[in-house]
Amino acid sequence: MPALVECVPNFSEGRDKSRVDAIIEAMKMDGVYLLDREMDADHNRCVITLVGDPVNVAEAAIRGVGKAAELIDLTKHAGAHPRLGAADVIPFIPIEGVTLEDCVALARRTGEEIWRRYKVPVYLYEAAARTPERQNLENIRRGQFEGIREDIKTNPARKPDFGNAELHPTAGATVVGARKFLVAYNVYLNTPDVDIAKKVAKSIRFSNGGLRYVKGMGVPVRGLAQVSMNLTDTDQTSIARVFEYVKREAARYGVMPVSSEIVGLIPKKALEDAAEWFLQVENFDSSLILENRLAAVMSGKMAVGGIRAGVEPFIEQLAAPTAAPGGGCASAATGAMAAALGSMVAGMSRGKKAYAQHERQLSDALARLAELREQLKASIDADAASFNEVMAAFKKGKNHPEAQAEVEAATKKATLVPLTVAERAGEVRQIVESLRPLTNPKMASDLAVGVALANAAIQGALANVEINLGDIKDEAFLADVRQRVTDVNA
Image (tube, rainbow, N blue to C red; front, side, top):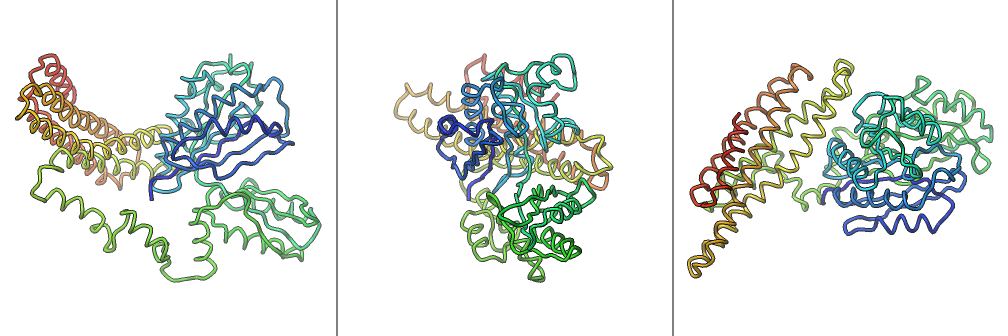
């Protein structure tokens, strides 16, 4: 299965269907799928659910912000739901083959591009936040469009992460972030007494000392009392645990659940975790589910036989008596592994109380390492492709002397790919080294391996650069490359 990310943009329009249709139309792209759309007239807000390739989903969201800024005027907007922007909130959620750190990097690139294109300022929230106080959306949006409009001009705490210290005159600001999947989960009690539901909700929500990652309230729905909840991290607090807690608290008042419902979508893993909880299967793992195992094997993301089986095909390709993949591909892969180790160490320290003072540095490191890891992985194929282009140009040049210019052009490209790998591996090395005082000292060996891998990637990539330079005549190009090599080695 390809990498998938979910994006759930919230727009400040829930009454004019034509405007919502226009926003959705603007977000249509290949590789992006519309899973859901909800409009609420009272809140005057709509929620769109998109899933697809990360790059295309981000572009779709950016275009949606532009269309919303064109169609929605917050100076004439009113509704029950708090809002700061025409495109109010844009969260990215990892679904398949994508980490939360990948979504952090995606959110930051998206925020920067929104400002660049439309001059709508952007705040970063949740996992993408650069300061702890901005992790909570409510802190950013406090005062809403009307209250922040003047405060932002004089209060440094209100300065956006991207953009000037002023709101867009009609579109306000947009809040972009990365978070885990949020599950809207409701439990109906066999009583119409809403006070009981409110008491149960108060006991279960984290803000009142209940379960972590649970928000809740009691409301009347269809003649029954409902405990309405948002589960913000079902990996940490499972839906099964929430249901059991509600059931136990309800019993204190002589009532019990009659049913529950999921509003919107839910990750497959959340249901797998519920099955494990209730069935009490020993040594349960999602790979025991036939469809999961089949999908993983068919997509190449898993091979029967463990980790070795997953990396063995690439190692055997390197061992084969063919010129590509070769040292350049191996250097790129090594650099990507260095970035991955840095991400692992930073990710295991971020969010821990002992390292709270380093939250911003760790978040920034994770975001940048995710970008570098993806770029270095892409360079594995790019290096092999550039080598094949050189071989094709040489073959053509044997029969057509005038094709020598194509040979040099292909050789230049084959030089720039490993040079870029060396530069990126150098940045990886710098970030990984910077993590030593910010992370758990028991993981120092992982960082040491990361630095060693980054060094190997640099040395290997520069060896590939050097071997190509003898076939290039362009003195200006040679001078530029040699300066960049010097910079990498500095």
